[in-house]
Structure formats: structure tokens, C-alpha cells
Amino acid sequence: MALNFANNNSLSAITTKPSGLSGGAMNLISTQTASSSSTISFTSGIDDTYDSYIIKFINVHASNDNVVFQVNFRDGDSSFDATKTTTAFFSVHNEADNDAKVEYRTDHDLAQSTGVQKISIEVGNGNDENISGQLQIFSPSSTTFVKHFLIRAQHNAYHDYSQDSYRAGYCNTTSAIDGIQFSMSSGNIDDGVFKLYGVS
Image (cartoon, rainbow, N blue to C red; front, side):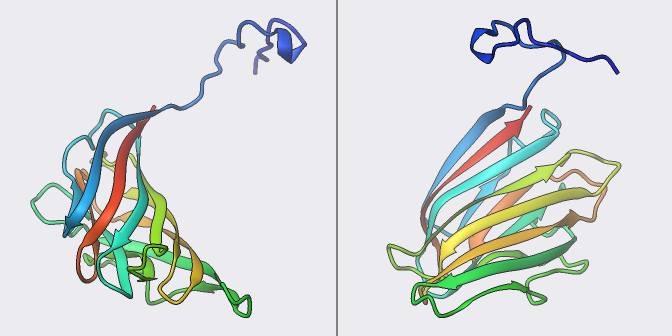
């Protein structure tokens, strides 16, 4: 293995980077802003241009109290019902500082299910009860392999708990994933910004 060196040993004096080094870049493809929206759907821009895509959801606010923020995937037809197997856990801590835990949630994981994947539960509709986080999917256009994804979200629950949610899994299909849809279990996505990026 060849070693690559910068042209000067002092970091402040480096004018060129070693050959063969490159970092990934996030390329913004599209932005959607929710406004009493029943769903936010990305149905274009997820293709074979990039090997990985990230959707950032920022200050997502629910119209109803105590609901679930959720996601599903489309695998080539008109329905968001790709078969998924997933795993789920979260850490929580309340404002009163008398309860905290890390917990695996068997009621949030899926086993060969076409149903929605829960991202955040117990979502409130107060102005200080919103959700931010991201979903990353890998090689969604592959027609050979399953499609792995990771989700991380943070929100202030309706009962004043900080919830840090982790979800991961795969769409168990060799069909391309060409759409991703977000929704609440009840009511609308009252507000929030959703940004789709391709990672190069």
C-alpha cells in the first residue's frame, strides 16, 4: 500500500492535499415544506445517480397530540408498502430529571412487514414539541441487493421527555426503491422542512 503525504509537514502551510484523498459531499436535490400536509413524499430524485441518499427532517410539527411520526418506502409501483425488517431502540430522559432509560422496542420493529416504520412516538402538538433528524438509504436503485437504511431522530414528547430514537433495517426487495413517504399516525404534518440529498 502506497502512502500519500501532504506537500509540507506543517498543517498551516499545506497548499495541496495528497492524491487519492476525497471526502463525500451532500448534494441538495429537493426541499419540501409541510403545511398541514397529510404526507410528505419524495417520488423523484431517488435513482442511480448516487449510492446513498439522506433526507433531513427539520422542526417537524404534528397537528394532533400524542401521535407517531412514521415512514414508508415505494418499490416501483404506486404504493408505499415495501417489505421491511427493522430494529428499534431509544433513549429517554424527562424534564423533571426523575426518569431516564435506554430501551429496545419490540413494538417498533418490523419483521417482513409492508406497514409503516415508526420513527418517533408520543409526538406532541405543542410549539416546543417538534422532531428533527435524518434517514439515510443505501443503493436504493440496486436490483441485486436489499436496501439498507438508518434513521435517527430527536424530539420533545408530549409529556416533556427528550426522546432520541434509533431505527435501522432493510427493504427486503431486489426492486429499486424509488420513493419515500413521511406521515403522522393521525392528523397532518403541520409544519417542517424536508431536504433530500445525494451523497457523492
